[in-house]
Amino acid sequence: MEPTIINKQPLFLSCPGEMAGYVRRKDWTETSLGSPETWPTSLQTILGVILHSKFPMFIFWGPELLCFYNDAYRPSLGKEGKHPHILGMPGAQAWPEIWHIIHPLIKQVLSGGEATWNEDQLIPMYRNGKIDDVYWTFSYSRINNDNNEPYGVFVTCVETTSDVINKRQLQESKNMLAFATDAADLGTWDYNPRTGKFASNHRLKHWMGLEETEETDLSVALEIVAAFDRQRVIDSMEATLDYSRQAPF
Image (tube, rainbow, N blue to C red):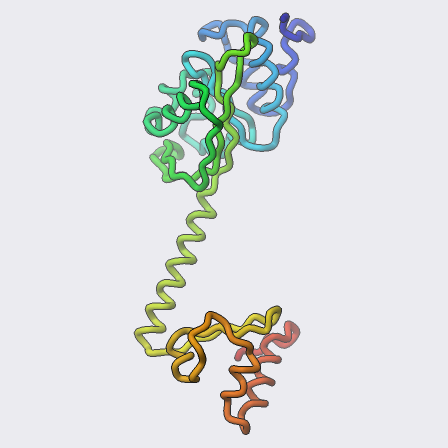
């Protein structure tokens, strides 16, 4: 099948964006692919897809697993790193620091295996002048050539580094709070106004004579409060839940 050509250039070369510009300007005759006019239709088609997409995408193509990526993927490469010189570079040369991690996944897909899926996977990479711990959620899937043979790998991915760090910091904060609570011999509780449930730690349940269930109706907990003080506690909680007042409890 002849490549789709517009103005003597493959159609994908007319895509907008920074990376499409790099693809147009690169001298591909210095690579094993040769001039874009001779590229397989399957490669041209998938490049048209990724260069138009706003979702981060990457391609490894051919025996050398040459690299292509789009504008949405570009920010994850950082500064003083791999951009733009890894465009068209063999994968093993472009990603030496992680090749032992990603090459087995590439081989699995190209050998007929199912597409891969990884969530929040730590894959360190060189960017911003150093090796960064980078977390990804990504999938590798096979691309066939014009003869319907496995010939490339299509990568859809999103960097989740910020999410992983935030979750870790949140867990560390929870751990520190739990440690401080235990060290100070404190009882703690939490009320969900949507469910009307009252959750407390073991110490408070013990003090109040509550069952060791995860949650209790707030009304049950309030019954334990001395009758003369109960309304004050209720009023204070309502004031805290009133967004216009935002009173501390």
